[in-house]
Length: 335
Image (cartoon, rainbow, N blue to C red; front, side, top):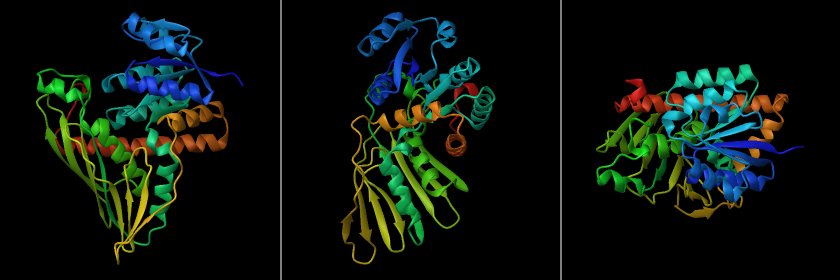
């Protein structure tokens, strides 16, 4: 089977990690890199033996030899670039958050189905074996009493905000902010592990540029609440915990899980649980799985898998949208 010909939009660090993961799977070749700066495209692609560097967006999107697009541009550009790629008949892997609102998700997924191509949001942690292991353990709990999910890491880009600048990730114009960048990991975990919440509340701490720098979200379910703590202007070392009547599950993080413990509610004894060794490249699992579904797109099992991912992505997006509205956070293209 021939290797998938990959085209990259975006030359940030996450693109480097994905390309390295994709090449490590042995399922892809890097065919072309697009950037508004040809020098950047050439510099990015050279270590990975990219066949082409391009600064002509239309020519890149319509390139006959590119089969799969990986989009890692600023958040606000994802929707247009995804739609353009799908119309050109490309499979599209778009970094999270894929889209700003539910209408965009619905249109993109409709177009992907119409075109017969794969559209996936690169929420890499849901494909990790240890994330799935935690989900299995949660399903085995007798009575669930809620959870606290944490992902808070200081961003060096905030230094620029303090200096009076407005980097993309802290910009309303580019759909930035803590919820859309790190909070989405906790929302994906919550919706994947517990389902879509019935009610949400978001208490955002906004920064000078108008986006949320950090915040606390409450997801209300029928019989319990889930608290989300996330941010980009501070760092937290708090673990993630899932509470039940008989025990608490303690996880080091919602992303890149490498430690899972079981704490007895009766005597507070701690038992470390056996988990899978984590891949060295954090995006390896998603790159491998995405290649598999692209190559097996016509198989009924693959179609069912894609349907489940799409429905999960839409539920996460609906939850994110409601959380933003709760905190009066709107992006430029929504005003």
